[in-house]
Image (cartoon, rainbow, N blue to C red):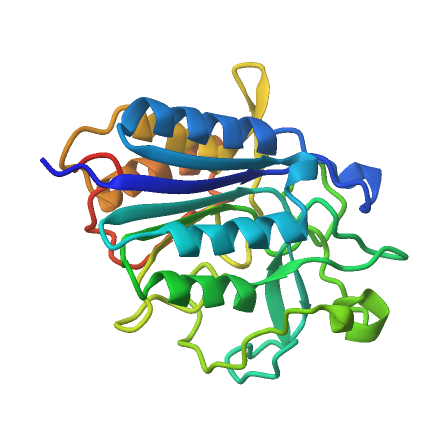
Length: 279
């Protein structure tokens, strides 16, 4: 049995000081800690970076992704986990693949709405790092426990309404890093990133479809993301030789039960790959 080094970046954000107070989450940090704990228990060769709340600024997250790219070697596994808000902004790259005119984003700790600047991380910026990682490995897994937007102000929804301000008004135009103008593959079923293909190889697990919301629910007296709760339970009991398809199948059934069908997780890419620590 070969054991690959697992390089992991785990991000969890409950506190959003530049969003309305009712947008604060209650289970994202607990989710991040739980995922990290599972990896520590299951992986014998773990290189873990964890960014929680104020440590998960836009600059820190992108810097950690760049560090991950620089450190990864051909025999490594890579996992990036995000638990926090997702949202959308007007398409920044004018590419044809964003048919609805909106870019998907992840909302870091220091991003805001209203009078506060938008510092969201664009899907294009994530995709650029995936392509860089693909130069050395195709064993890449992204796990996103977020939804694209929360159209209503609801407790326990991991999404912020899309920011309709112009790039200049929102602060997007002042960024030092421009979005990618590369033509990308069509979106996968989650809507987050271009679907994996022969040139861009990675596995994506997302908490819900692009028209659904990722929920926080009470489990054993603690608020947790429904998706991450089910995922951690299943990963804790994986055995050598277990595939992501097998893990995901159980998780999907658990989510269907706990959310009464309101949330349908998505998987994109080579689901027949072995789960990270089951080699």
